Length: 571
Ligand SMILES: [Zn+2]
Image (cartoon, rainbow, N blue to C red; front, side, top):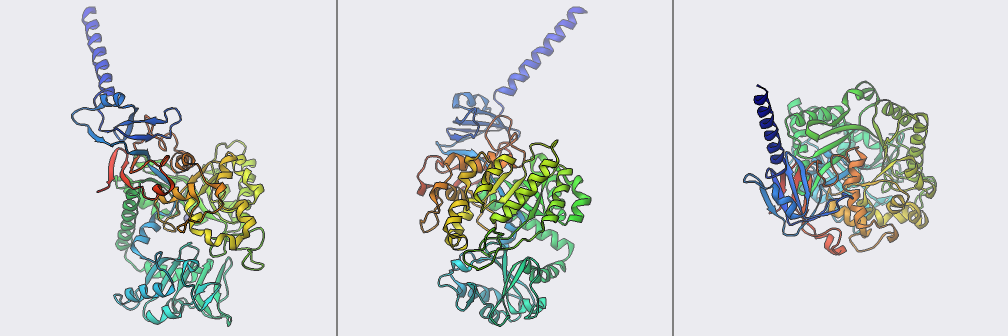
């Protein structure tokens, strides 16, 4: 009997050993060979091959180390020496907004105001009376020739209104911080000469006080409210179908551009519910870290039950709150310490009061949520740093909070070291710098621009974590374009914006991978190519760390792999 037990035990041990051996050899689902792999893993920086199993990285190393994981059922891809990085993480963009922008009229490429008017005129011909026409991406500073007549450089609605007598029109500014409406939309909104400016917003007017059609910051609500009412008339099924379509379009756009994770900068509970349902049925194609952007009352009752870490196999995380302290620089909404250099006595807008932001921050810290407050101007950034510093001090038991400032675009010199000191993450968008540089010096003057505008290098040197993104649909969601901006600070005309603030290639790659993962507390599961992490991988046509600056712009995505599945492949 004893012998029998010994033999049984021996057999069991043998089976276990064999199975363990099986785990190690010959059972990868996917193997990538012959790559030039930047792992962003400091312990193992360079590799040639990757083995993937069950959506995760099984091994990374040299070819002879990885080949042993290949079996008959393994898909093997020869990368021909192509460059491989962890999947890109866009750390600040708007997921549904990106999807919607792919549905709405794109005005980004319109050369001037006349061209915008003719795009809308053409579209209006196919519309029923009363149907809204929505577009986005116009920017008066980029119009050639400049609009004439104009107010503060903005075009007037009159030409647009002539071609759209029966349809309300809403055209969002490229910055997302102003809109332009036609006469029909203003009539529906009841806006006229006598309508006062709301708090934190401006109805732009001509010298007679008549609205020209442009609504800045909180004044946008006059028009968006009416548009939202129009949208609210859709049936529940139609609303849901529209959201799902937007999510689908945004996902496809991201995958095409190598984005495998996305920090979604503010969605309502309603949208989060929908995303959760999609995650439940494995219908999310990229990983989302969704910041909650909803009313205080709703957050107060729902926050605790909405905290989600890597829900649905790592596709949905909810652990942060999005708020705004100011507007954008282009529309002069950024809140500055000293007046704008190109608008006398104007300091910009404080769009959410300090008291309100403090109240929301208290709610966040009590529920283990991060705050992620939008701050563009130096005053906006200082106030947010003050709010964070104060609340951290009053909660000494809470550590490693990683609260973020979204954009951190323009900083007073003395506030730069406070990010590292407080452990505040700067969630910046390199591409904003090169898109906006033509007017930054005008708005801020050279001294302020040099000292504190888009100073990601100063922040990195001071020890702060800088993550990167595009703020899509404000910009193209393309990480390659943004990477180019980060390392060159060069605009489309080849002009350079304060070159001493260029990021190194490696810092730029980290800002788009591991530092984005850090900002959502996910650096242990993604952001680098290392054993045990999600197999989120991008294969590119050229080496981002070593090609020339000009070559960066020609880099294309060859493969986008999320959770070990090839979700995009270039033709
Ligand atoms: Zn944003």
